[in-house]
Image 1 (tube, rainbow, N blue to C red):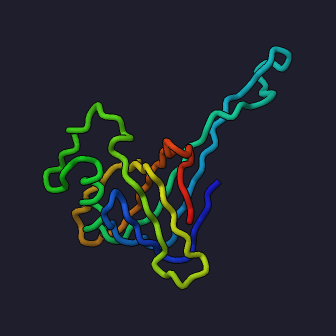
Image 2: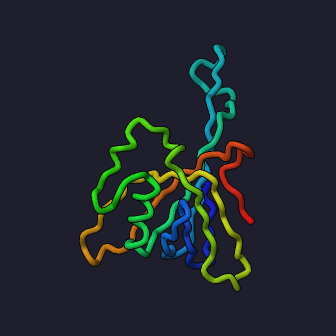
Image 3: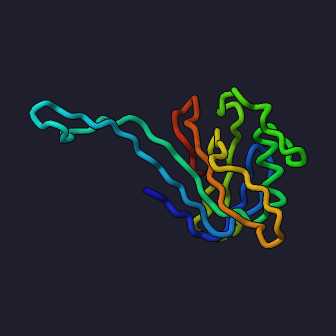
Length: 156
């Protein structure tokens, strides 16, 4: 189920670096995982399900490509000028994650909650846009649970 914060654009701070604003709101997608339970008397039919955890994702369209690209490379251990992220091969992705802080641009709005994830990872590929018309695009972060609280994110 997706939760849409549609109070307008948001400011994004990732791994301590401003990556600009979103084109609109953000989508928070919580994916519930379960394992099917089957019994002999029902053949291949599912008789129940076992809760097996959850995954959490944040999706939005960024509008400031010149801020987004350097921040993504810096957070993932590479350099945008060199295109080098191969130094991270074999590392745990959690070591490359950063704090994701999302706050509304218009704080006068009634829905001025700040969204914070302690460990966010870039899920999709980092695309290098070489056309002046391609200055905004989609980005997806996967949120890992906080090791102390077990929560994927906090809203304040």
